[in-house]
Amino acid sequence: MSYLQHFNLADQPFRLTPDPEYIYWSKQHARAKAYMESTIWLADGFVVITGEIGSGKTTLLQSFLSELEEDVIYAVVSQTQLTPTQFLQSVLTEFGFKPFNKRKVELLDMLNMFLIEQYSSGKKVVLVVDEAQNLTHKVLEEVRMLSGIETHKEKVLRIILAGQPELKDTLDSAGMKQLVQRVRLRFHLSSLDRRETREYIEHRLAVAGREQKELFADESFEIIHRYTGGVPRLINTLCDTAMLCAFADQRSVIEETDVRAAIEELGWEEHESSTGLHEKLQQIHERQPVDAPVTRIEVRADGELIDEHAFPRGRIIVGRSADNEIYIKSKFVSRHHAQIVTDDDGCIVEDLNSTNGVFLGEKQIKKYRLRHGDTISVGVHQLVYYDLRESSADEPAEDQMDGPDGTESAVNEQRG
Image 1: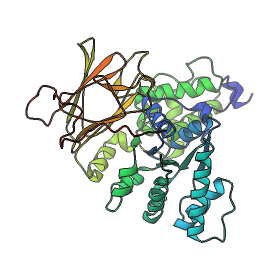
Image 2 (image 1 turned 120 degrees about the horizontal axis):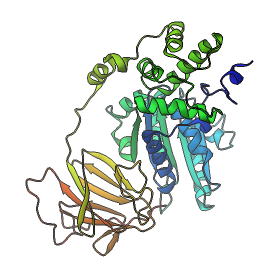
Image 3 (image 1 turned 45 degrees about the vertical axis):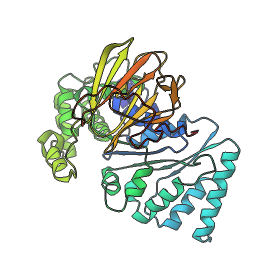
C-alpha cells in the first residue's frame, strides 16, 4: 500500500512547491491579495508585500496572476541580483522582446514605447518583482523611474514588489524616500497563529482528498506550531515528515510521538517565536516605536453609532470584505470601497473606484484631505473623522471643502 492510499489521499498535501490550489486564505493572506488586486483598480498602483521565508508570498503571487483578466499584461522578474541594465533586459524579455546588446537608453525607450502602445490598446500592464530584497539601490531607482512613466492622463505601469523582511529595511533606509512616496500600499505577512496553523493543515489535507479531519491528533497541533512558528513552509516540512514516520510504523493517525520523531529526524529546535527570541530580535531591529492612535473613525447608520476605530499613522481600507480594517456589511459598499491614509499632516480619504462613490455632503469626492469632525458617506453609512492630536473635538468646519490654506482639498483626478 502506498503512502497516499494509507492516509486516504489523492495527492501529496504538504509539497514545498508553490501551488495556488492549496493556498489557505488566512485574514492576512486575503489582505495581501486584496492589496495586489488594488494595482489593477488604480492606474498608479504600486504595492510592496514582505514576509518571512516560507510565508506564502510566491504562492500568493501565483494565485493573483492566475486570476488576471485578458486585458492585463504582466511580467514577472524573480532573478533579482542584477545590474540596472540587466534588470531592464529581464523586464523586456518577459514582455516578449529580445533586448540584448542594447544600451540602457535604448532599453528605456523600448519599454516606454511598449507601455504607451499597451495603454493605447486598452491594456493594463503589471510588473511583478519577486525576491525584491536582493535589488540594489540603483535598481530600485530604476523601478522608481519606471513607476513614473505616464501619458497625459495617467501612469501606465502597475508594480508589485514582493520580498523578505530585508526589503522593508531597505525601503526604510536613507535615500529611498522618493521611491517610498510612490508606494501606495505596504503589507507584511506574519506567521500563522495556533488556530490558523490547525486550519492550514486541515485545509491542505482536504484539498489533497482527505475527507475526515482526524488524521492529526488534537495534541499534535500545539507542538507543530511550537516548532514551526506558524511558517507555512516549515509546517509543510514537519507535517510531511511526521506522516512518513507514522506510515513507516503503519499508524493511520499522526500522534504527538510521530511529530516528535519527525522533529528529532529533522534536528529542529523550538522556533524563535516560541522561545521569545523572535520578539527580542524584532525589538532590536525596530527603527521606530509603534505609533499611538492618532485617527478615530466613527461608523454611523441613520445617525446612530454602530462602530468606532482608532488607528496610528498609515493606511486603512474601508469596505464590505471582512479583510478590511473598517468592515461595513452593506450591499451599497464595495468590497474595497475607499482608503484612509493618516500622515503627519492629517488624514486623506480616497475612493478606490467604488461602485457608489464617496461623498462629502452632496459632493462626490475622489481624494480629499479630511478636517477634524468631517463626515463622509459610503453607501448608506457615514464615517466621522476625528484627529486625536487635536486638543478638543471641534464641531465640523462650515467650509468643509476648503483646505487649511484656503485651497480646495478635493482632488478629482481621473484614475484608471
